[in-house]
Length: 449
Image 1: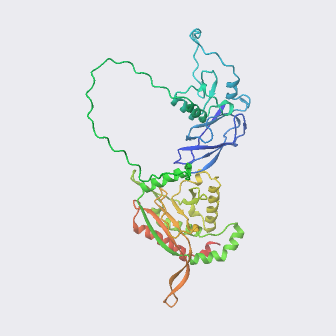
Image 2: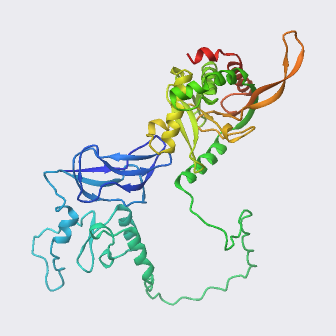
Image 3: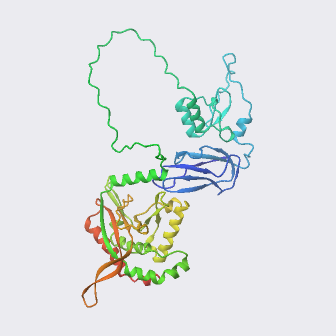
């Protein structure tokens, strides 16, 4: 009995994945739950466990190859039906080559003709060759006799590089000579027209000199670019901003930061305060916690707040992690979940459930020193909030006797990008005012208890 392990579906929008590393090789024994391979998608890098115990019989997709969700990746056999010395590859190599029937040795009458194996092809040398689906497509595309290619993979497997190297050493076959046609009268000479001017080079093209470094874009960078363009082309982006007096928050942080770090092992930053204040505003203005689908003429108002947090991967990309049911958490819980998910994202150990399904997103460039930011909406969300640097600045305050005075306060800006298709400017400003009011007036001392 054999079990095929396919490329898993790691999120609603994920359609393909790349093999990063095989943890098991052909012939290796596997227990149920053992990690078989690591894969990468545009959302997450993750490990794939085996659903059964057995022996790795066949690896169908090589490291570095990208295949669609559902594509078979490997075959695991029952321990009672296979061993490391009895895999299909071993059987194929140990079986003596049978002579190819020729014109002087017709097949026996009534003998069934076996169909070609799905994972092997016999070429001119009579050797059975094993191929992944990607290699099989490449062979069919170029009409290559697989028997002429020496496989460099495990067990003599023919890899994509083997096929590409072979194609580079042979000349392309000349097209067949068309059959001779009867002579016909020559057509009149064509009317000469002025040649069209050559197409101008793209305005953005830049000639690279010898000192420039050319590099391929990572899969994550390509997908980030695609998502950003899709968002800009889909949502009607509008940007609003509001200044916030963080003095009440700063006082609570100063009073508790040492004990908080001693108790929890990490710092109490401004971000969980903003998250807590924002969740309340999302409950007050549910249209901001919605998804918008113009083509279907509908909007989905989400009952729960699944708060997305943008996480920088040490300048190698950006991902959004999701705090599910964020309205159930208070300040300490939000601080803990933000840290856990951020560390998990940077260590590439989060599952798809932790990186999909956000209903609203917060990005936090403040620690890098940003003043004001206008982030791009994480569609199908209808808005995204940016928390920028909190710093001491001179502001005008009203004294107890009603007079104006200058004071040094901790202030910062909130940048709010929102989709004008989903709601209007009054909602955007009222939403920001609610967050501002919460940050400036809530009893944050009580929140920490």
